[in-house]
Length: 561
Image (tube, rainbow, N blue to C red):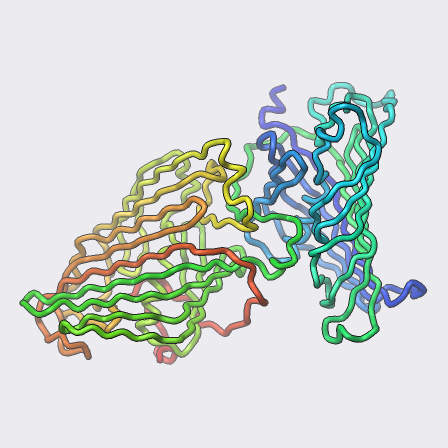
């Protein structure tokens, strides 16, 4: 049994075929496409499989023009089960094409009905039940047949593992099981389907068959009409067929430990409203307090805004900073203003956190520095995968205030087993930013980052009512506290506090005179408010070169407004 110390790995052959033609009598396919891959899955817990795709090959035939493509994707994903079948996916950010393939794979494992309840007294060969599917909520007729299995004389008798996905009380070794599902009256299904031509899809026939004996095979076929989006009122339509096959090929010993999942939790069925992916909305609050060393009044600015972000690729977020409400207290006088405004930018990530920003041009330097501070709220500053069981450690971290020695303290609160299923049950996506292999869904993580000894600090302070330049005789500002606190559970909350002192330079556009000492405090809070379906495609934007988080990072002068 030593070969099986890491458990079994199930390998499946997967095939997805799309066919679009004008009429039943049309012999030639107008648009055709196919994807073939191997799916490798391993059980993590009784209710979960950890899988990945390998050797994905695609072929397309568009009006006789044929193309082939090998798709490089080793995305790891998890399939979570409940008593009815597949509940959801745990999946890393990926493009829509790979996401749809993974959804189709996961659907092949789902019964979408509690077969234990249907079979707890005696087998029911046929029954109807409501089923939530990728084509909407359907009324499904289930037909189940049992047959005695006569094992082959060549069949190995020393198999260590076999696949069982059905909680059926009458299921026993030596039984061949066939389950057919015919669906009709599907409602709330996707209005559009994207293959190579976008169209409004109307399902006419939607069936699946599952065979379980000494192996596992599934076949799903979807037939319907595809109406071109550009002219939906016309009588012209195309016939659309999609078939999915999944066949268990081998069960072999796994060779290493289970891979980690750096994922969002995605409900796989009835996802038409999520066709453009999720959009995360954050409440942003920024506070700036600046006081001279004399008896002059404190200048205060309170800024409220909204940040909306969407996963663009596996290593980036496309974000929009929207509108400002500003309350200023300057010289004991309050002033309030509201600014309708939008700034688009992209946050790029690497294995230790935020790598940098891509911003539109032209842009004011003060805005660039605000975006740097926002992006810094998402950055861990360390590769946490290499410190799974370490609760406290120190690293060098690049921040807007320079390269700092950062002490990280990580605490976690494990979920109660009964609460995991209830938590966020109606949400289609969850937000996770930590690539930590032993973080289970429902875990609350608290991270405190305390920074000291910052090198290459900026020579000016960016506050909302201006830029305060420092005297040349002082190389760095003096930081009293530079701390970030991050809390991640079913939400994402961060707060960063920076306070210290500096000496002003020559007159710099603010009301502060030169050569006086300034005490400053900056607080930035970012709280995840909601996760909603995005309404359109991510726009194509011409960006600059990658800009680092450190305010001292040089930028092209032609790029600054």
